[in-house]
Image 1 (cartoon, helix red, strand yellow):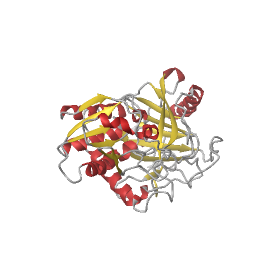
Image 2 (tube, one colour; image 1 turned 180 degrees about the horizontal axis):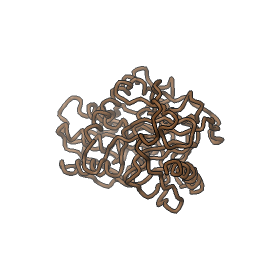
Image 3 (cartoon, one colour; image 1 turned 60 degrees about the vertical axis):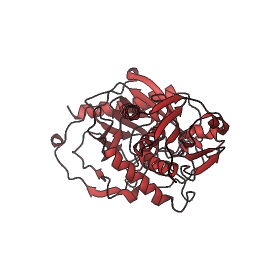
Image 4 (cartoon, helix red, strand yellow; image 1 turned 120 degrees about the vertical axis):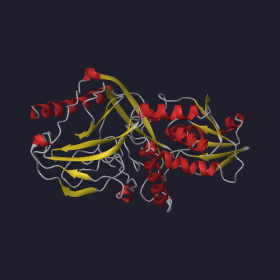
Length: 392
């Protein structure tokens, strides 16, 4: 899904932060407004902000690192560098990593480095393959970077640069995406709703946005999502009078949503129930891995791999989220005026905008920008104020 590309071609602001979804050519037939279930307006008030988080997505121009390396007497399987697609591709990427870790047979114990999305899924899949697993990490949820993710299925969000990934990567990506999709379907209906379907609305008055002044160099990011059209719902253009938004162009799509707090808790609990162990550890150089008893390791260090492996191919892509108090009655997402909103169960995500995937590129600043967060909240407040009037 590309929450920033849905309205392309419709005269609307074009977003390109996430993986693309081919828009449906069909227009939803006009219907009386009363026939559409009302949407509770988001209570976008600055005084309802309870935190601001910043995440550094670990982007690599050639795609995620998934090779095998020998470090001393250790066999290290790398599984990092997924850009904005870490949660979305985690099960598929981790299934490939576990296959490589267990090649040749005879492996009874595996160590996993990192306790984020990739670390937890790698550990669980290794457990299910019958081996004893220990996770080594400096941080665990909710303190890991992947716990600050937006929470939408975005399997090709900043996954690679066009023309830089290996020739076989599109097919590999398709396999990872489909494997992950199938696994996430199994979490639908689980207590706590770690994964659920949710509608998002792309709202625009048909005025194209301006590119960020902070990103003068524009790079072309690889797009693969159209290969998943057989399993993904298509975007609908909503006819006037069928929605409550004061806008010329409104589209809707359904997508999988990750409630990251509950999903992380489910994964951690599943791992521990099956006998897994999580040990606090910090590794500053590859030589530090020598202290671990396992001979086979799966490296899921995300952005931390840049320092650990001196991997300058890992580029930070900064993203900021303002969190509003949850609204159980509001279960939808919004894209409006370069701001993305998602009403999750653990809070309403308000993600600062900017045009294009270059926003935040090569910016390693993890300090919150409160002024930008408040500006985004006020934009949504203006929209939802008009929306409430129209629904009276």
